[in-house]
Amino acid sequence: MSTKEHWEHIYSTKTPQEVSWTQTVPQTSLDLIAKYELPKFAKIIDIGGGDSLLVDHLLALGYSNITLLDISSHALERAKIRLGENADKVEWIVADIRNFTPTETYDLWHDRAAFHFLTDAKEIENYRNTVSQNTHHLILSTFAADGPLKCSGLHITQYDATTISTLFGTDFQVLESFQEDHRTPFDTIQSFCFSRMSRK
Image 1 (tube, helix red, strand yellow):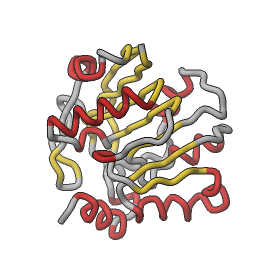
Image 2 (cartoon, rainbow, N blue to C red):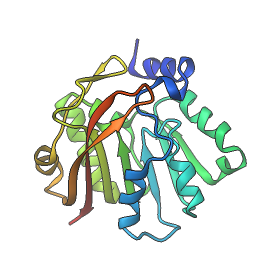
Image 3 (cartoon, rainbow, N blue to C red):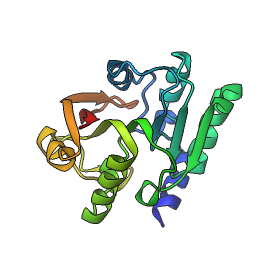
């Protein structure tokens, strides 16, 4: 099964309450985004957003230039159905982040739990280069060094403040980096590393 087939299967067979990453209110991401004090027309892209509720909250806050990217068309269709008429306010991209080539520069690149699925050194470097060339601000959330080793049956790469700074520090200033526990819908705890950065 290819990576795309894997995620299409997940999103076509499991409800939001059956996957670990679901958040009713993605408060940490919203708080970190607010710290940039971006104008409401700022270009924001959510990488691997799936059917996350982040887009709902951003729209409710008045942000008007949101792009949602995911490898799974099923995930994006679920989000479109949920948003109803508001879906027309969002740009939807079905793509694998490993070979995504942006056609514009974003003010903010948000990625909660997509980047850590890259385990190949070349793929990680390509991601770093893509981000460095195509955004001004970066919010990155991954499994922490004491977090899970796998998610949805796939291996991941763990990070902490030091490894994030080493990887992205050439082009970005790390404004803050911290660990946070995420409580899953099935009442387990996952340790995440959040980092907020801006281009130097």
